[in-house]
Image (cartoon, rainbow, N blue to C red):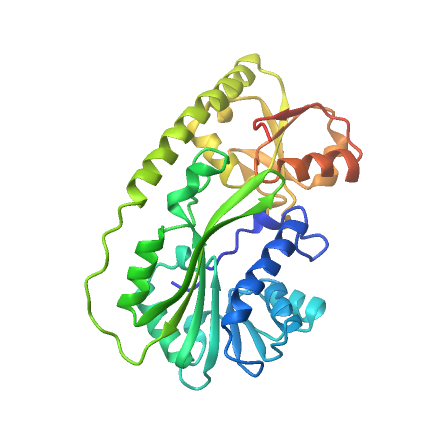
Length: 341
C-alpha cells in the first residue's frame, strides 16, 4: 500500500538526465517550504519528508534554519540524488517499513502522497506512531474542486495512479477521523510546466492525544467541481480525436514521442493505435528496447535516424519535448502537436 508514492517518472523525463528538478519544481518546492516553515515549532525540530524524491524540499527547509531533516523514499536513485545534490540523508524504504515509535519526528511532510495510498487507515496508524505528541503533519494534495480551472490534457487529473480525491472539506474530515486537528489550510495553484498549472490543497494538521469519533461536514464542492471538469474534458476530446482521425485516415508514417499516461490512454480510446506509427520515442531509459502495441520504444538519440514527422503525446511537457527535439537533438522533423499551449 505504501509503494504508491508520488513518483510519476514521466514528470522528470526532460530533466532526469541531469538529476535535477525543473525550474518549475524548484519554484514550487520553495513555495511549499515557505508555507511549512512558519508552522515548525523551532530550529531543532526533527522533520521527515515522506516521498522526498531528490531531497530538494528538505534542502529548502534547511536553508530556512531547520538542520534536522530526513527523507524517506523507496527509490535508491532518489536517495543517491539527494545525497549527491544536497547532502540530505534519505532512508531507502517505505513508510510502512519505518519503525514506528522507535524514532519520532516533530513534523512529517506528505506532498503528493495521500492521493496514491490504497490503505489510508494503515498509513495514519503509522503516521501517528512516528509523530511526537502535538507533532505536525503537512499535507498537499490535488484540489478536485478546481481541476476545471486550469487547462490540461483531457482527464489528465484522473491519473491512473490517483485513487483518492480531495476537496478541503473531505481532507479535513479524513484528518479529523484519524486524530489530527486543522491548523492551516489554503487552496492554491502553481505552474507545473510551461503553461500548465496544478491546483492544490495545502494544509497543516496537529496530532491530538486521542482520536475522537465524530461526524464530518458534508462536502458540497466535489461533485459540481468534478462534473464541470468531466464536461470540459469531453469537449476537449472532440478536437483531439478529430486530429487523430485525420492522421489515422491519411496512412502517413510517423513516430510518437512519449509512452506516458496520455499516449497510452489515446492508444486505447482513439484511433491512434490504427495509425501508421513506426515507433515510440521515450526519454525514460527503463522503457528502451520494449514495445507498445507492437511498436518499438526508442531512445531520443535514435530520432536522428528517422526523418518522419513526430507526434508529441504529452501536453504537460510538450514545450520541453519540442525544445529537446530542436535544440538538444538538432532534429528538424515535422512536429504534430495535439495541444494548444
